[in-house]
Image 1: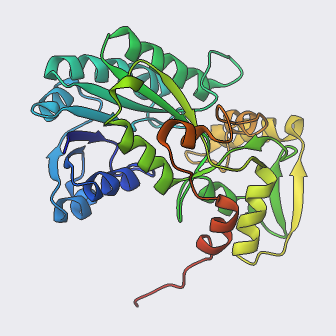
Image 2 (image 1 turned 120 degrees about the vertical axis):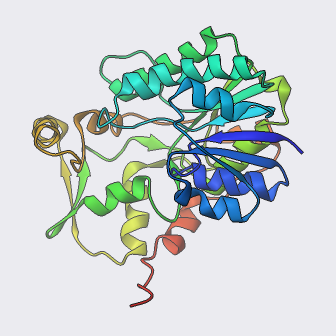
Length: 302
């Protein structure tokens, strides 16, 4: 049984990881700004500490007495919090806090595609964050995932926003290749990595057991929701200026220029068997999962 501090527990991936840690019988401590959002974890025995995961003192104090830190902290857009503050400076602060607290290891969750490239601001910020974490000298493992799918949130929000009037809008060609993995399976990888000290110092890229296109995943959503609208593929040269305008005028635009560019490039793991080769089990196939689990649930209550 490990003593684990989880940062980002109330986020899209974090909810799955928190419950997976508890399912495994580990001692879980979460650092959150709003304790009400962590109520489900506290009921199951987790220790809830109130603080900011981007505050070095808060993280160092929360890490005292734990053996491992799992960090899921990142932002996909450059506001209201910036890439620099969260995706770049955050990992450096994490490494320094982990060393100060004397933890044995850090598991840092990043994204496939992370690299130094001015055409991709988000991916560049994730790569820079990985570098900053490594510079601290902490014993760390970086797990990069392809698209993570769940019953709510994530790419599902993008698809819901893409239904505009009579059209289902696809940014660009929709033919970029993806290797989506279910949140449940991604969480299992993250938690199992804690018990694998031989992986420390490595960057491991993980994805599901299928290679599909962005349009394929969108089709799963349309089928699940029984949406019968004409698909409209907007060419990137037309979409980027519109995305720039929307980003300028809105605090929460449907899509940003950086997201348009990212959706045009392949997002693949090290191999179709990336999870089984590292962890010894095969993740679920999203193609059979999504059409069932993305069906819109009826509203309950009054």
